Image: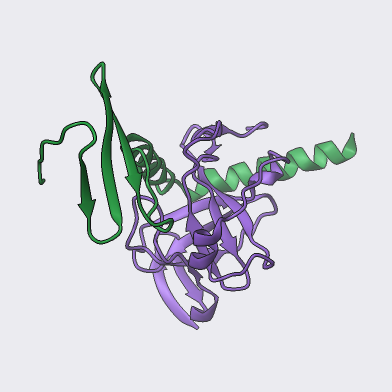
Length: 140
Length: 83
């Protein structure tokens, strides 16, 4: 186990369990490794903490909790980045914005594709889709 | 920044594998054709910038706000189950 100080206090993590973004996130190309923080409270939201910048953490959610028909299939290039073949499963996550007024939104236009078998993830931009980068949660 | 003048039908080659061609110039807009390997993602600048801005906003949040939201979610769920 390793330890880092974050703005949420000290966090312990197992290096082998880190979520690896080979290309970082959009706008954060140098942040490759994140700790997946379990949500102590029940609910659809959890967060990931960057280990290379202790100030940076992102709230994520499975968008299909809110939009049942939301689905993205990685293309061959994306599967290569995730180091998975076409049969291996992957999951879609959305970056959640939590402003002080609690009007939380998620970015359906730039989802994260996560491959559990390799612990790798990439953020992709859906350029020609009708999905909005600020999609407000139905019950928020 | 390297600045070059090109005419319709002329192009540019970047490295060994990216070709850019000027297709059409009409009403202040330029149509550009790009040939690049699939692993080179191509995005409109303003779309990419907006996503980077969204991520920067998303990185700025407060744990107490999230905590109270999560409490709300759980409460909503329980209420739904009662119905």
